[in-house]
Image (cartoon, rainbow, N blue to C red; front, side):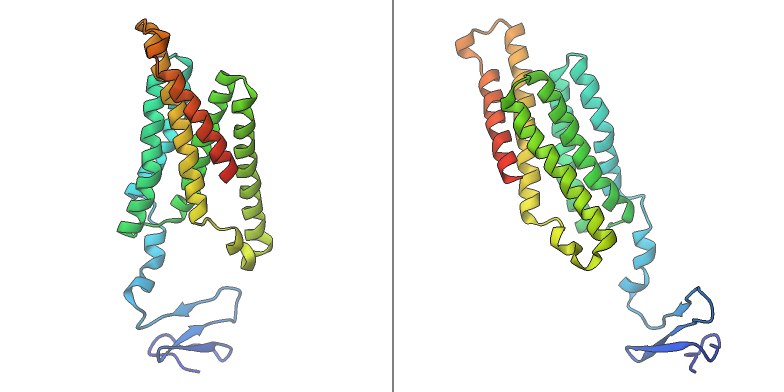
Length: 231
């Protein structure tokens, strides 16, 4: 047995070579003790940075979670313009927190949990509001397709991580998943903006020929169908 200048290791210890220095794993009990010397700094600090949840990306994700009940409250209070503005701000944080996490290297296990949760809550709650408002199959069907896919894929990923961890990469988020999410956010934003504009035009007495709110809303519905197809 070798101790690498550290604490002595019993005869049942196993030594593993890594860049000329053994990693000593004491297997005399259920706990495994590993001494690492000469490891690169990014590996030595990975555990501490991964456990640090007090980061700017996580704060932005938290704001996106808070925006979900804010959007619903503004909607039912009749402030559709505020609801559209809150959704726009939340959609921006969806891109910005991921960019900052990569740029600053501030990845955390909490962020990996909350980021997709915030995305799904934001999309699902907004779609439910739009379905309730539209009360038409043109809105209900694409919303149902999107929500069904999100629930199905989330359940599949969780099952794969538990029962087929080696094959879990096959259902990991890829570039087309980001395109799908962007189309969903864009469609919902256009629909909310159209409703807010339509309400403002009606309150201001704008003639039907000069109204753009309804046209914008219809364009959002078309985008929602495209997003459902991509989904």
